[in-house]
Image 1 (cartoon, rainbow, N blue to C red):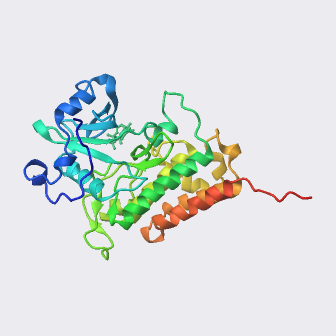
Image 2 (cartoon, protein in one colour):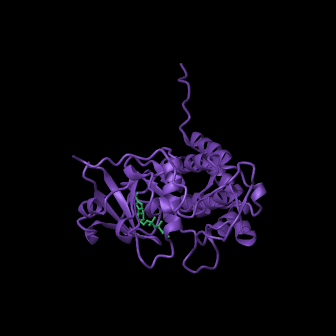
Image 3 (cartoon, protein in one colour):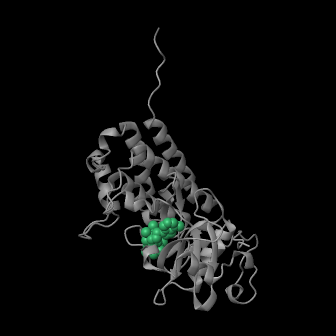
Length: 323
Ligand SMILES: Nc1ncnc2c1ncn2[C@@H]1O[C@H](COP(=O)(O)OP(=O)(O)OP(=O)(O)O)[C@@H](O)[C@H]1O
């Protein structure tokens, strides 16, 4: 009989649950099943490597296509990030968040098992890939940003701050639907009325909210800042930090927008196809996300609304047929 990989309905309260009293038994996948799914973690199944470890594609016994994230022994991330990922994804479920199918913590292993996302991460569709992927249209880019914004808005409404929003943490499924992933350093606000969390600064260079960096106060607006960087990556098809490290994409794009020259830095492969009104709405929204004071940044809900409007402005105008 096939193993049942159903999602748990209860929550993990402390790290010991993962090793001793595990209320997530049905969420746990035996190590042998994962060996079988990946031909014993054969490098032929390797799809990438991150801070946590190697990521493999595989197929479980019940036919589910999965991505397995296996912690490497030297990873700076450990039980805390592993537990956080499981906690968040077992509580939060949304069409724009990646689904966690299970985990394995046998034999000193820490392995996370996710739904496999056929089209990998957003960044490889924008730049730097040697795969010669087809150009993603402006409409598709807007749909991806809208999907990611919906996922983040949902998280914020659940009092969760992602903490590491970047284009490699936005995955794309076979239908080109965006899904937020990588919750290892996410934080949950203890109380809804508390406005921020004081914490050790974590995150990724080029995406880090400068206010959070200086004051160590993490808020939802830190995610909004990072998302603003992603919006400019999508628009310009450039990484958050250039090769020279002289100036970040955020600084460069904001300066260009202020000078009224945004069109000059748009990805040349789509610039002619973007309607000026749509570009203006998108550019203004991205710049607002990057406001140096978090108070002046929009909420994720506002960002979502503006992006939907930018898509609306891109739609062809249907004119009445003059008779
Ligand atoms: N569910 C998934 N489906 C398909 N590919 C995935 C999945 N999860 C991760 N990947 C791919 O595996 C690779 C490594 O991902 P991982 O999240 O470990 O690191 P990263 O986000 O690239 O970097 P970092 O660890 O610095 O955040 C990426 O190329 C990512 O696209």
